[in-house]
Image (cartoon, rainbow, N blue to C red):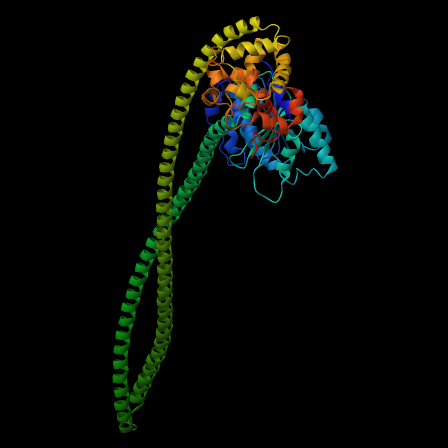
Length: 595
């Protein structure tokens, strides 16, 4: 791991490169697609990486499409000749994603319809600049020989590998296990926000921004600042995704509410029509009732007539008894009366039958009309309950929407405040760096003069120590054993004499900006250094050349002699103990002092 880090330290990149240099426009791009996934919170980082290295070949394994659509949008906005390839055999997912991406981004989006662990996939893809693993934990089964062999082949073809869900708490640790395995072999960084995103760098990059990011990642404060910036930007993307999802749900609800309103209107029209029909039936029933009453009146008249006829018959019967002896003419008259009586009797029976039929029919129609009216009343009550329920739901969604808009305004306000604080901090850092650049330019001229005076430092070390004692630079009481000190300083001076000014000042600058060196404390702790004409202006240079091997400490947080005694390999290497701790010891979890 140390060799990989040192490989990234070469070139013009240094630990003093300001964090402001890492700021790119792409970090603040708004994504076209805010579908919620494990990648949503890391969209600003993906945009930053695309602008930083301008990749030619970005490959996404799997079908959710989160990184693929981001790659397509980023390459389009950068006007790059690169391509984004989606590798999946999921028919539904690939059809939806590919249709959307082809419509928006044209030839930038490519689709390889195949299962990612098929043998021919690796040869079809060729060299890969960025490889995003958007596959399920079940697919990421390293115990399967075929899948593991194919995954290893794809990783070997990639320069940068992106692994999501590294921090996600679950029983399946497939993502975190893969990241830990690759991180043990290659340079890596880990974003902790969301479910985590692991980034593996397999190759050394000529890109200065990327080299600066990796170098500054080793510094605790710089790493936290970078993580906080991308975490804030990522949370803004996640909030926007949530707002769009809820807006879509509200739109769907309003659409459904409109359909329900249309149905209610139709039902209302039907109810009005039924009420009209009911009124017509009532009017018809009234007419039927009037007709029945008229028929009953006619029947009463006929009954009265029949009763009168019965009285007449009785009278005629009595008269017939009296006139039995009369002529045949009277007999014929009686016969006619009997015939008429028979006729009226049959008519009366027919009327009784017709009266019963009409009464039953009217009674049944009246009962059916009552049942129909009750059913319509029940339906109208149900529709009114639904209208009330949907009104309550609409009011609830309106309240939720107002709360979301309020939260969104607060998030924007916090982000603007954070940006102002960040810009203020950057300005202060730039002013401090400018002052240190002026001091370093002065120190270069001073050290050049000092080196000309000490060209034979090893052979004349004793003479040099006597001269420094006369100037007040070194105190016999603080130095300790003279023989041991001369041996340590002599060994380091031999190594120091072989270095050029550029290397010396790079080492000094790395000590100066670390949190383990305190210039004010060092000068206060060692008055002899504070009184020296050269080292009082650059205590870090004195600690680099002499102080570390004279049992002097750079701050209360680092013990030079204890570190050398506890790590014999560092003592044998004759390397400044604080430099070794900053470059190697931190990553190797070595302690800076006795706990």
